[in-house]
Length: 369
Image (cartoon, rainbow, N blue to C red; front, side, top):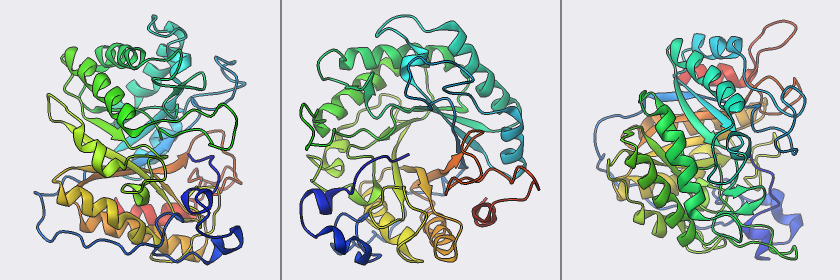
């Protein structure tokens, strides 16, 4: 999920704030108005689009770390998993906090917290769905960037080596290395800068640690700059993901690039208003072209739109784009679901607590299952 300010257009002063609402559907997540590249015509292989589901929030909630279970954070319920599997979804993305599972860097895992994660993972697998594990930390541990000061790339590799060793026996569990790596707001004193090159090095270290356990599970690798698909080739966050992530190395060659994309004016996922009905496909075009052109696979780990006519059309347009390019996309997970969002969250697809009725967005999602 995004909690950022207006991104590159405004931070780089290309347009005044009053122009944000006028950004066209062709803008790159509200961060540029460059023409979209043509997508290479030749498919890279047969359809790989097998993972379609939701992010089940709760375990990443709360600013207190470790916090109090049941007060500061929670885990998804079995009933929620049943609901989404019943709709035909085949993967549940489970966000959680690294610090809660591993309270000390490079230390042992907390057995109680790991048991909570085990419970939802085991149940999800038992009812026929896959799982995508998602340390929802923005490339941080206790708000310190990986590779900055006290948090090292070796610490990150240690975490993933231990987690992979714990879950390696079931290849229906996918390993999402990290949610939305990004730098701090540069206007804040003491801001930390995440270089794309450093993120790639940390990701490669984690991949090596995973494979050293013998795990063959799929790994998803996010990009720098909030992992935004439309900004995959941008430079506002540093060296473009489109250049640097070609240096990812996986000995098992079983990985995909995870990107996120929202359809509000600045692409932040903080508004339920979508720019236009074709914003979904427009903002994915550059990422799709990069995937097909480099013969790589991708995964849309987060996307969302409000329960209004324009957004419902934009959601359908985005998923139709993914269906069209099923040779490069492994799948998608909607943001969001989970027991604590409540009925007023703009992107929730939790059924109405009183009537049990589906949310409007679910009516679109099921058409693409």
